[in-house]
Amino acid sequence: MVPQQTLYIGELRCKSTHGPSKVELVTDAPTDNHGRGESFSPTDLVVTALSTCMITTAGIASQKDHVSLDGTKVYAEKHMTTQPPRRIARVVVRIEVTAGVPREYRPKFEHICQTCPVVLSINPEIQVDLKFQYPD
Image 1 (tube, rainbow, N blue to C red):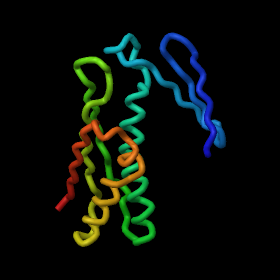
Image 2: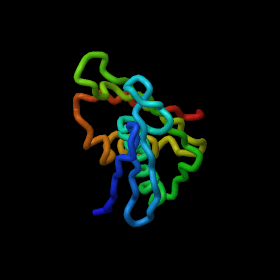
Image 3: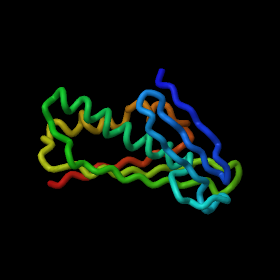
């Protein structure tokens, strides 16, 4: 277990500290929900966890397989429900894969992204639209 601590610092902001590294992360409520939107919102972090888990998990496998994913970009956009209860309804993820990833490796890469731990942990009611773009 990786311990962390979260402190409510007021005005809809929290500061979370990662136990082992002491790295701090500040969240803010979004502007459409009473906040200033000056940092990641809690729901932004869900989407960030999703996109970083996809590429990190794929990166672990690609290192073992001697395939470089360096320079691959992941773009993610969240869509919230318009009716209560407020929650994430849909996440659109586009992965722009760097040049040089062999065609025969791509199905493995895509499968890893589609089955990373965060994908498997999020509520199945959240629609995840995942698209891969290759330079060739």
